[in-house]
Length: 350
Image (cartoon, rainbow, N blue to C red; front, top):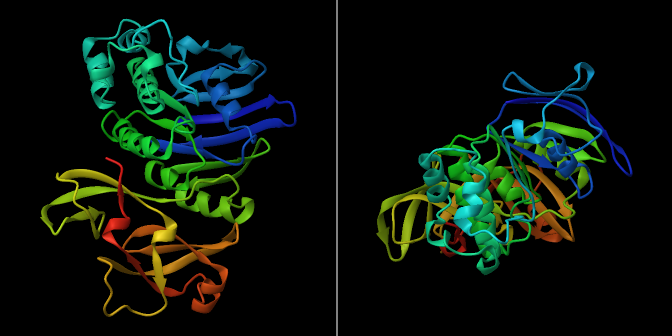
């Protein structure tokens, strides 16, 4: 997808990142002030003083040694910052069309339908909610026909409920439009669900890179969970049969039970780590509809609690419990465990 070898002097440290990224969706992780936004701006061509090379699918965007420095408008990069930055004097439709640069009506239709903003087209940005503004900003970026999307915590200013409803749209951008993106987030659930690869930055230096699960574990082990939003997110297929307000939900090889949303097809659900119960022995009879056997992959302290990562039925779960309870159960890597999750604990996001 993209090869990066850049340097940029910043106020408190120098950004120096060299990486080769091949995934459709790559996360930029790390504490606040570590250089993630600066790296996105360097790729977009919005930062002066950047040296090195940036090559996207064979096209050289930057080669300072050879004097190559494509301006932002020629890089075909869509950038969505934390603030949506819509033009206040233009309608939603005009905002989206402004980015099209002569694109076809099909491009416009794909953008507004994927993000489900057709009813918003005549409205002014000032009348939109935070979640609606971010969906319009994403549609505008898509309408520019980018070869790469840069998403800088686009959901950071959106409340929890709205943020959850936007996650499925990001999945559609990844899977249906097949637009590769770099995504800055502090939400571990978002990262695990949306992303394939990860880069973890600290004070402008690359501390970990690789598959997103490994990078999340390494960042938690070395950097802690300060500022992170931790939840379990799952995308799968809702089955036909519904019974007693509960419907089957297929995620990979796992079959879970979730509240019946009244439809089949694709579904996305969130589960809080505190809503997952752990047992060190098999559970012969329990009221929870979801009981899975698994194994502890890691455990760490966070804010007075113990966060335990468990692999069960091919899924990665994060469970929070007291340190005393974790010690009693002996929840260390390699320990066989059983998870119990009520169907009602699954919160629908789509």
